[in-house]
Length: 130
Length: 130
DNA sequence: TTCCTAATAAGCCAAATAGCTAATTAATGC
DNA sequence: GCATTAATTAGCTATTTGGCTTATTAGGAA
Picture 1 (cartoon, each protein chain N blue to C red):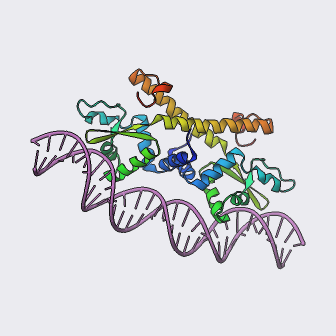
Picture 2 (picture 1 turned 90 degrees about the horizontal axis):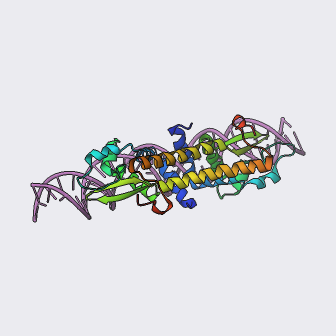
Picture 3 (picture 1 turned 120 degrees about the vertical axis):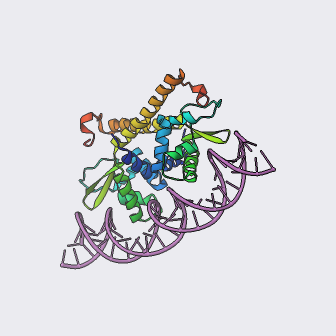
């Protein structure tokens, strides 16, 4: 269960365009091209990628991308694993699963309260006019 | 369907502690005490509250809270409605419903891909060791 | 009209953020 | 050992953010 502090860090992390794009690509396989460069004999999740490969997708310096990745890691959105002299980053799906649950719970509780207080079940047609 | 730009604004808006707390209270009824102050004969959603009532919950000035509310509104997280000389704010559940869907879709697509590529269905017991 | 309240707009300032380059660390390869 | 590559750390700067106070706008009440 995510604390409020953790949720805040996640929102802060994803509220920056560069970090949002890294997040998107890491979770949807946008960086799998990095497989071509993977070191011989090193076993990694094929969705994983290394910091320098991520940096190639941006016009920002490697230290800047490294710092963004650090923030995504500290927010629990990705995990990192050092193999040789490279650092591979992987999506942390459990955090996203928890976020999905938080939002879903908020919506279902809200709908339940609305029904309770207003005897009103939301329909497609009246989202803005309860 | 939320654009990336809209999602970014939502994350930015919720990445600030004060705005997060306003969001939380507006959606969970934390400000319903404002009902006591509602103007006679004015029909409002009982979960709604006005800007000055929100400000009473913080040690920040009214203009500061007003500005935070403006950002939440511009992110589509709340709606505002002027009644007399007060501005009532209400949760915009549709935006949260869309966020819930985004995260849920990301998770289910991720799980589907994982099964596809690794012939592996995630279980409770092995979240970190696929 | 005049006064009062609610809210916003404008302008100011300190702190945080996001970029950079240069320096450092760590692992690989010669 | 020495050079190369990957990544991080440190230190710097410009911009953005988040707070404030003061001024302004808008509506309700005397």
